[in-house]
Image (cartoon, rainbow, N blue to C red; front, top):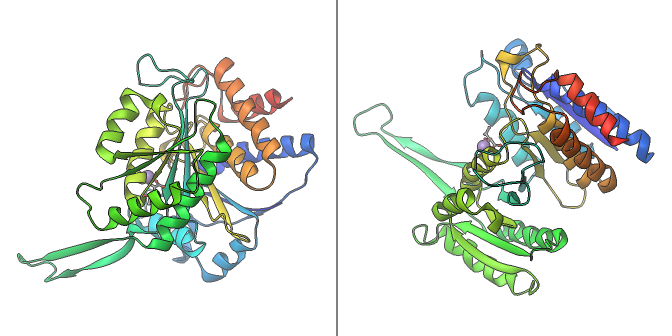
Length: 353
Ligand code: IPM
Ligand code: MN
């Protein structure tokens, strides 16, 4: 398995080191080999050379079986520059059209939702990752004047929503939730009468091919309500890029915060290259202190393994993570774990055995 590693900025390299420590241990146990290639992309390189994502780097990244990304975001770089230049550009260039975000409350992790436990908070959001308001279509008229007009268009294509919805139905079928297979389309068909009409029609057409999956619909505002009130209702959610961005942060909070939430940017097509990342940012104020939580980063490695031909290894890592959160950690907050960053990595390695 050839993995490109972008440790990135701030605490990104520290949590990445723990994920790689766990990769090494599980590879030895499962008997597979891997090859890592480091890429020094991120804020430091940008400040030194002005480069964010050189064309040859994109080409090289696609030669790997997967990309592992620690974190990007640098206090001396204007907000948005690295996010657009690196993260969004990679998603588009590599056509990573699925953003996969498990919302799973691990044992021992405190959720801000009173009375809800791991059996209640266990669903997955499938977010379309290449279209919508993220397409960058728009412009200014009379910029800087009192008459200024700005437009930002949400682009939806039949191909774009169909491939995402179809993947979500397949995923729901394979996830095979014992409580029942349900895929909920989250959109806003009552107001977005063009773009989300396309999504809704496409969803219903494809649903006919999956009679074993309950095809369900929620408006996005109601979904925010239900995610807090009845998270146990959800199995898999499929949604548009912008709404998916918003509801997955809500999801991250109910599963215990940015220290535990992981995600994947997938290009599931033959030969596609996918990228896995912990959801938390670079947290520059904690850099080098050994206090940042690596659980999200290790969970992102579990996802990478699951989707890159080593599902048994991925399942082992996820089980080890849950045993560590359930029995060894005082908290999931930076500095309050009861262990250093590398000790948490060591605990996960120990739990593997
Ligand atoms: C995410 C992030 C990105 C997004 C930002 C950093 C551009 O919030 O992965 O959810 O909006 O998609
Ligand atoms: Mn986001």
